[in-house]
Amino acid sequence: LHIQNFPKNNIINGLREVVIGGTCSLFLNKGAKPLLQTDQNNFWSEIFNSSSEEWIKDKEQQHTIAAYSEFGQGKVVAFGDIDIFCSDDNIGINTLDNQKFLHNIFTWLTDPVKRSDVMSFILDQIGQFQTILFVHFIGYAI
Image 1 (tube, rainbow, N blue to C red):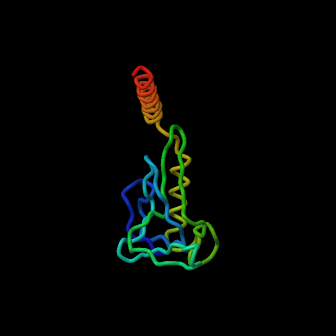
Image 2: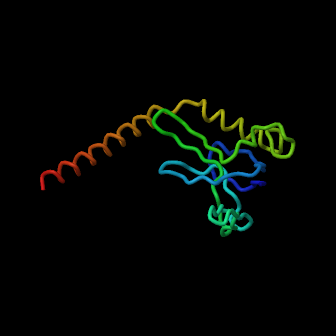
């Protein structure tokens, strides 16, 4: 897969084209953001039908194949495939902008989370916990 369109974020800055081997798509949870996505019109997926033991072509749509998130003081990057880390000249680390892409990811991962972001996260978690307690308390009171 040749990825040439990237979402706007600091991790992707300066990239023109990243090459990924076969990959799995990712379903993103709240707070996770796409890092690499397939082109909406030129990519299709297959789903394995276990009863017929055949791969069935799925509809053409955009798929997220790499994503990132911050959680408290931690950071996470997820890939749908690990081929980008291999030495293969066609899909590996030395292909097109793959090395720069991985360098950007490791730079982002090692950059500490801002203290204000951590405080916002903690306060948000406390607020969610209070809401759960309140709903639970009201449920018992009725």
